Length: 119
Image (tube, rainbow, N blue to C red; front, side, top):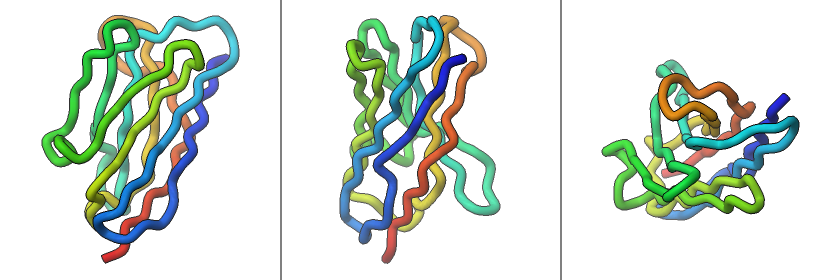
């Protein structure tokens, strides 16, 4: 069974930075794409960023473009989300997800890590 473990969340002041990590382990799997999503209190979960494991092609939500950078370390089966110029509205639980298929839903999800940005 594939497991995803996020780390790196915490409390930061507005304008600060955090780097989230997502380590994938367990079973036999082949990553096609890794994504980051977030869910703020009272809101639906939303897409933040994603990266193709082969080729490194990336996609971002408009709200984080220019501030967040997604990357991956293929050898370590680990993805990262560098978050700069954080804003209070970035406060949420951040989840990473993994997809083995080339399209469709993400099959595996982590438990999430809390990011809190104070004003």
